[in-house]
Amino acid sequence: MIKREHYIKDVREFYDSNLIKIITGIRRCGKSVILEQIMEEIKQKSSNVIYLNFENKSTKLNIPNANSIIEYVRNKKQKGLCYVFLDEIQMIDDWADACKTLRLENCSIFITGSNSKLLSSEFTTQLSGRFVSFRVRPFVYKEIIEYSKELGIETSILDYLIYGGFPNRFEFKTKEGQIRYLNDLDETIVINDLIARYKIKKTELFKRFVNYVLKSNSRIFSAKSIYDYVNKNIMKCSINTIMKYLNYLKEAYIIDTINQYSVKAKKELEFYVKIYNADVSLNSIRCQDNDFDLTHNLENIVYNELLYMGYNVNVFSYNGKEIDFIANKENMKYLVQVAYTIIEKKTRDKEFELFDKLDNSMQKIIITNDEIDYSTSVVKHIKLKDFLLMESL
Image (cartoon, rainbow, N blue to C red; front, side, top):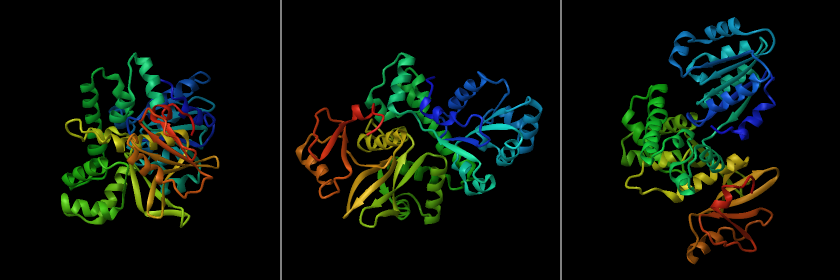
C-alpha cells in the first residue's frame, strides 16, 4: 500500500502531543492503513506502543468498554510516553471516557472512526478542545496512479469516473471482482451498518431512500424536495424521517452536503444544499446496463479533488443562476464550473455565459473532459486530465 503522506504529514507534528488525534472518514477509505503507517513511524523511535482494533471480534469481546480499555493500557504500557492506537473506536459506546482518562496518564492517543459523532458537541464539550481531527477520503486520482504503479496495473480516468477510489478495489484483478467488492462494501457500510446502528425499522423505506439519494449526487436539494419525491414515488413518511435519514448518511461520511453562497446576500443559503457522495462508485453500482451518470460523477470527482487540494467549497448562486463551486484557499477565490464536454458551441456558450457580469477579481475556471483548450481572455479552461494532476488551481 502506498504511503499517504498527504494525510500523515498533517498528523506528524502532533505525534507527541497530549491532544487526542482523531482520524475520521467513511469506512474502507484507508484510515486503518494510515494509522498503521503512523504507528510504524513511531516504532522507529519507541517500543512503547499499544494497538487495539475494535473491528476485531476478539478485541471487542475481551475489551468491551472504557474501563477495560483503561485497564488494558495500564497493564501493557511502559514507562514514559505511551502511544495508544484505537482503531474504529466508535464500536465502543463509552470510548470517550477512556480517551479522557488515558490522555492524563502520559499517553499520546490516536483513534479512528467512521462516524461524525466522534466530533459531536457532547464529546467536544467533554474534552474542552483537547483534540485535533483529520478527515480521510478514498483515493484521488494522483493516489490511484501511484497505487496502480505499485500493483503493476493501469487505471484510466474513465475507470475513476465510474468506479471511484476505494483503495481495496484495485487489488482485484478483474472488473467483475471489483464490482462485487463495491457491492459488498455498499451493502455493509451503507445499508447494514446504518440499519443496525440506528435501529431503523422501516428498512425498505430506508434502502429505497438511500438508493435515490446516492444516485442523485451533484444535485441541489432541500429536505422538503426529497420528502416530496419519496412520498410520491416510494412510500409515505414524515419530513422528520427524511431529515434523520440524511443525517445518518452524513454522520457515516457517506455523503457531504454543501450550502449555496449568495453573492447578493453575501451569506450561505441554508435551505437548499448540494449532495456529493464520498465516492462516485456509490452512484455507479446503482446504475443498470452500464448507463453510468458520467456528467454528475465528474462534478462529484472535482468536488472531492478540490477538498483534497485544501479548498473550502460552496455552490455559488447569483440572480437565479448557479456556478458549481466557489473555492477558497489562502485568501484566493475561484469560480469553478464543471461540464463533461463543451465541444458543441451551443453548450459552450451556455456554460461560459454563467460567468458574465461576475467580478473579475475571482479567477473563472471551467473543467471539462475535452481535449481541446477553450480558454478565453476571461475564463480559464482546464482539461480534466490536467486538473487531476494539479496540486492547486
